[in-house]
Length: 500
Image (cartoon, rainbow, N blue to C red; front, side):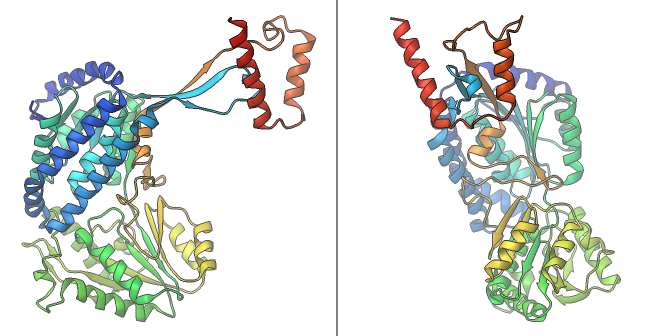
């Protein structure tokens, strides 16, 4: 079996047709069969660890520990899904009503068909596999298109998948934007995309052509709010790590910090100390830190440096860092203050190791600042004042929120949904949420013994039926669920005895 498919453009259609032809058979697979596939995929992934580590070193100069964190995400998701899949696949009974007395009502989950994952480059193993674990669990055929910006990881992913799946069940295609464009012309039933807004819009347009559902996670300007009640040293350490992890190339990274004006100077100073302690403890310079990765390519480097140069040219204050080296794709951890909305760095997602620090006076200022921009993927709140925490949670919206930390909401607890809101994303990934994204929740009602006159509901309508409808439409006594369940039980007993 070989999942490294360097298909010509016409062959992509043939590949999709093979996947679509296999989908009905995958629908019939049991929970244990699907769980076994997930376990084998996990085993193949962990066995490929040396190749995965080497690919990450070549692409981003990542430390092995950072890559292992990706593998841990895959492991956690795979084991959780395999353990709970049988329960998720069972028909789920729902509460009855007066109008469904005597009837059996439940939800049956069925696969959508063929699922596409357009994966990005900043965490290629986790982003490539985690969404499709849910697709496999739901009984779908899968196609993975890894990013061409992480070509070494793409080849490893293809090798891993090819060891476990036949190409008509789970295929991997490699190539650049032209391949992605042609793949998006195909009538997939569901599409996952984690990446930027420009491609996200293309994915939505392509999905609309075939009425495919989508799960999009597109990042954005994630705020970190630091109240005067916060532990400044603790907040600075955590935000410094969150901003510089993966050299800032993380969709959930804090993009700007809103700091109470009375502690802004102290917070900036603590940030500088934290950055120095983590990434330049020996004093040799940030460029020599083994824990500081590089920007993925020259195009992205030039974009980030352009944001920095534009901000400085418009009067931003360089509080810390600011070093760049194009040939090495190096940007040092950098702090800016005195920024404003006219600067590009406050309009675009940075996706690099630069943090902008803005002061606020009143808590209402925080909400006004956040509402200037689309709803964020992540929001981080540092405070010890419980009333302030609750107020901010009640007056803001985000895909996820962390109190007194950052970046820890994704890949750490498969019970939690991961995703954005509107501009920052659509749909949810993680554990059962991935399974649900790839499933059609089919409502099923099985009729049972009639109540009174079974022909009462059919025309010509009797006065008795009209009165019953009018009673239910008007103000009527609330019938507790327990009573409805008891009546339903009596009807089921009646049916059992009537059949004897």
